[in-house]
Image 1 (cartoon, rainbow, N blue to C red):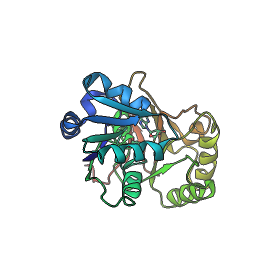
Image 2: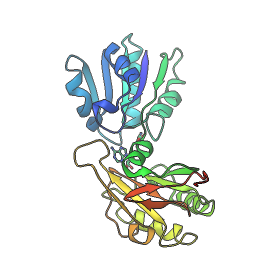
Image 3: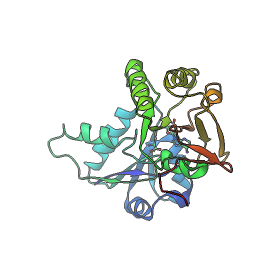
Length: 242
Ligand code: SAH
């Protein structure tokens, strides 16, 4: 049995009871070192399989092959395992085995939702989630998606807004959004959601262009109606207010 489990943004209280139950039945918990370290204290008796970042194929293959030996294995991811996580890759790799293990995905709270809760209610209307990581997606395609989302007046939620090697990607993304959105569009970012050092800011799109974000930041760009209500980022759903 191979579980693919989303752990939510960070804290134990944000892991669903269903995920906790599945983890408790596992012999082995596999995942990226940072996320394993988050849950290791809650399951001291378990065996852990960790691999560093950028070894995703190796990590998933190892999890599949360990499950095939008859063990119950959990592959854990932050947030939701099916949102830029390992769930898809597990299915893709498992199909090439003649008798693949049973795979069960258990949902988690993705950063878009946990970060939105920190800021207020920015995702009340149609939104598009776009990752700025061009490791597996050509930058031209990311640009096209940013442009289309801005033209469609979606609220936009950006994952992977920067990394050590990609310092200016948020700036480049903001320049594209500014082609069709005004500089005073209300935006926000949240760093380290549910983890030590959680910080957040509401700012304009013009200011966001120069904001310093890192790989543990999720960014929100409002639609044309999004506003700052007493320090909360809110996108009106459209209900008539008397
Ligand atoms: N599967 C994860 C996303 C992995 S992609 C999920 O569903 O949340 C990694 C990106 O997610 C990061 O670059 C960041 O933009 C966002 N992210 C994940 N966890 C975060 C956290 N605790 N705080 C802020 N952003 C986070």
